[in-house]
View 1 (cartoon, rainbow, N blue to C red):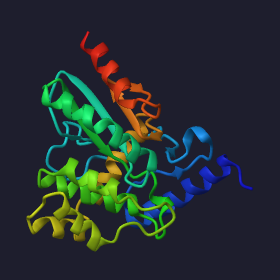
View 2 (tube, rainbow, N blue to C red):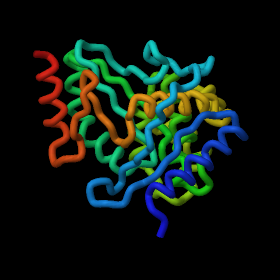
View 3 (cartoon, rainbow, N blue to C red):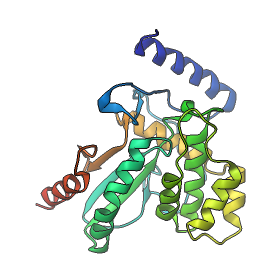
View 4 (cartoon, rainbow, N blue to C red):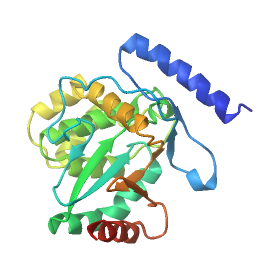
Length: 240
């Protein structure tokens, strides 16, 4: 059986060949078996600086173009999620009510980073990118969070093809998107370069595991029995 290091090297080499072919910078992925990491996505962090941000980015991006801000407040919360990561789905569901409460009170600036660490875990490869790009299209319609929730509700199993393009478009209607430009955005893969950039920036910042949640730059544990309580404590501590 291949060791994890060998698997990582092979995936890195494969991604490098793919980057030359597609001209898109993606991150090498490996999923680690083990009770603590079941359903999580792990990536070997990249020590090099990412390329410049693409010229086209979705509405609501942060100043560095590497995240989507969905609220404003004194305390910053960063969430790094992959739409093929089962633990990310669990985290999104566990934190959603508390995030809504914090946002409603104007306490937090919530920033999402839709990364594509698990592209190699679908067949054909690339579902994480297709889903993240579609979510960025939803951001242009002001429905990023609603669309993300639909994607996690319908999250496909690893190893399969993922949701079809038609279903990704139909999911927009479920999220309350009515504009025709959304379908064209999904079909064109408009934000594929941006999702690669977001992932490269995340890796360069040593974000190696999805889900990763940070409060004021400090990573918090969100895979325990009460992720919402952990988030609340971290926010209160950051508020002083």
